[in-house]
Length: 264
Image 1: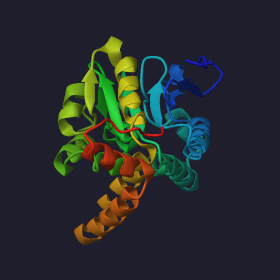
Image 2: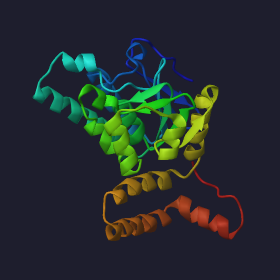
Image 3: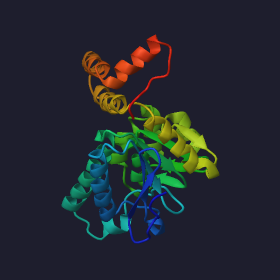
Image 4: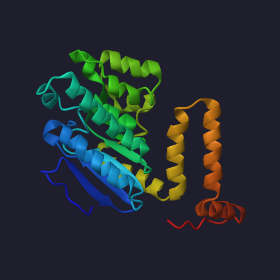
């Protein structure tokens, strides 16, 4: 790792081999709750990475005992007003959407707990790897608050009934249950979490950059459209992708029965 975590930073950035950047939520004393400062810092960093073609994949992790416990409730209670809450949730939503709109795939590296907006963060990442002791919940309902914004990401990862059960009960689910329900991709031993997440990132980073970027954009765009429009968008993407040097090389290599020589 080229940079060490610094305790005064709410977000730490580490450059890993293979064009991978690990962003670590760094408020361990608050279980990495999403304060306004952390939301702002994360937004700035995501925007910068999105504009940097040298970064191929992003890993999002948490320092200390948890991935993320959601919003900073103490900070929220200090200024109770409708206007403030609207601004706060709009800020958080912008950051969540930035994850899916940026061209690089983002992988959540989850340990400890991921609750409320922390669970939302897992859902909004493109992929997620959790250790076998991780737990997930959208528990606002237990405190009189339906997790409305987390429901957006959750309902797009899980079936409606599974998502709504979590939202209405506030119950925790295990890492294996999260995998079975579609919230995470892999569940790994605790001591292998960082390694397995990095291995997944390296596998994706080794793929042709144009195909990954175009594919991610198309994947989310077509999900929000009707079937006919989805196929129209997919066809346009395939046609553009086929004209890229990497695709032309890949097809030629297939024809010639050899390994592609991509310019990564």
